[in-house]
Image 1 (tube, rainbow, N blue to C red):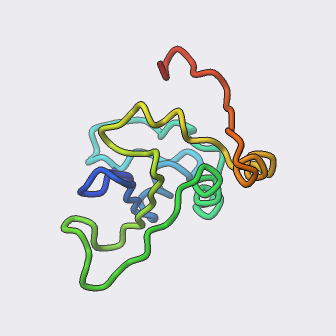
Image 2 (image 1 turned 90 degrees about the vertical axis):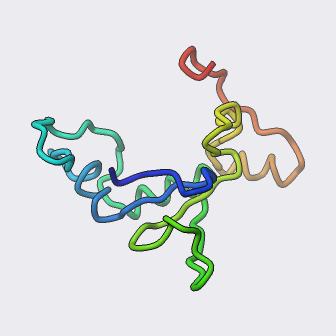
Image 3 (image 1 turned 180 degrees about the horizontal axis):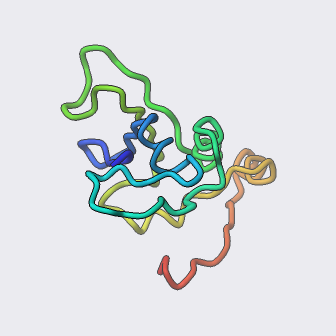
Length: 125
């Protein structure tokens, strides 16, 4: 419940406090209305929200600044908004373009070279 698409399917909206409770806190329980779900899976290696955001940044996601008066309906409140040009709701084919921006990858991009990642797994095909 703490992560959803923005209204245009072009980015992620994250409710920080709920995200921390659902996915980052060790032994956290799902906050899903009390249907008896067990503890949340160990989804991320990060234990702090700031560490999670740094990982998003390493994969090319950027925080979208809040613009007063120009919020898209459904994108307001305490939600943080992140975008990556290769992370679009109706374009799963673009996911393979998302690469971790290591120092070597940044140097390749700056030199105009292609950044190669691992071959897609059978789940990504």
